[in-house]
Length: 147
Picture 1 (cartoon, rainbow, N blue to C red):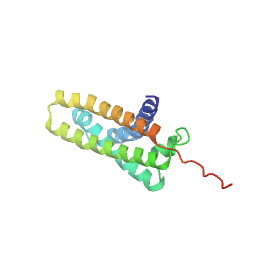
Picture 2 (tube, one colour):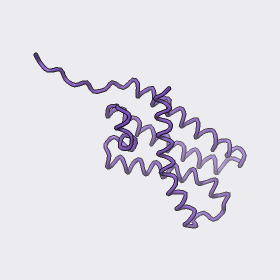
Picture 3 (cartoon, rainbow, N blue to C red):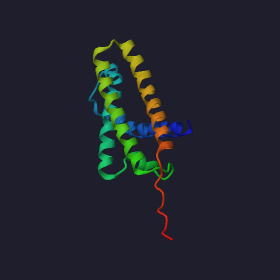
């Protein structure tokens, strides 16, 4: 469970860091002037931005964003970091599509419940799943010298 918590707060912090510029850009650009529409579509835009950021980072950093930021604190192999990165891209893609559909089709009360609970459940489930993979990923062992 410690691994899951470790992954959870790192994913949350990564999203928080990436969210601030998006929110500021949306509000200052006047792109969405209706405050209700801004509240409704902001999570979708943030999730799309997260996917774009993660994919752009992957072009520069072989193991992805989490590896670059916290790889020195969480010792694991390349397979885990690739899995973590791919899982985050998939999660944010699903959240953006799901939130867009929910915003468009659901009444505001149901959409609010979706926005509140589905994203949190996804973060927790992904963190627990990656935490289990972190403890189950074998570390690269140094080769033994021939005697």
